Length: 115
Length: 114
Image 1 (tube, rainbow over the protein chains, first blue to last red):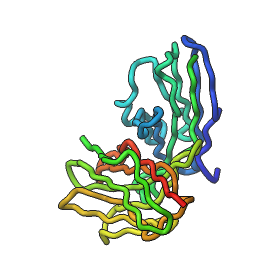
Image 2 (cartoon, one colour; image 1 turned 30 degrees about the horizontal axis):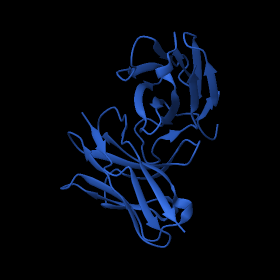
Image 3 (spheres, helix red, strand yellow; image 1 turned 135 degrees about the vertical axis):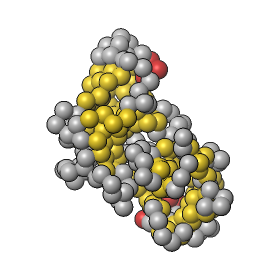
Image 4 (tube, rainbow over the protein chains, first blue to last red; image 1 turned 180 degrees about the vertical axis):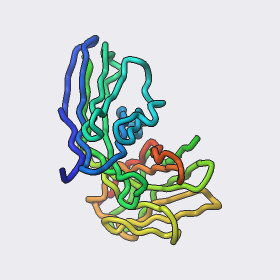
């Protein structure tokens, strides 16, 4: 696609529920990043994929968070047993491997609200 | 470890005046530096980058930034601010030759007054 697409744009869920957030990167971009942005803060790194594999998941806050990218394109961020503190905007970005001349392209994000 | 500091939460400037949004970084090696802009309820939009070459880089919408290695800074500038420039601005750094995971600053809210 022309840009990075994230769905849904908004998600409201009850505490304790499971949610999935989807990211469709730019076609051909092998690098994919997930970030979390809380109100008044900058984006906080969660996980980085190179192709199908998670090359760096050091930003995932705990084992309730998990992400996959089974075919090296679309990625899904999964959050189990959601807590109110998980409420944030979840951003996805992609880039071609080894080419940062156009920076990282971000999606519009998914605003997750846990009530 | 790599980090970015944006020392000002908010910058106020009158339309037509020059603007500067400050950014300093810390990285153990050569940095790649970026500026992004975020409008309300929108994702981050790429403004400009420093990878290598000239220290003064020019980007979208008339913005420019100067890489200063000795001061580890990458301040964003524009000669004449527009009301439409009002937004959140984020500086980011990554390490050249590393995994290219960018670290972002907390952001600076730019408010341009008519």
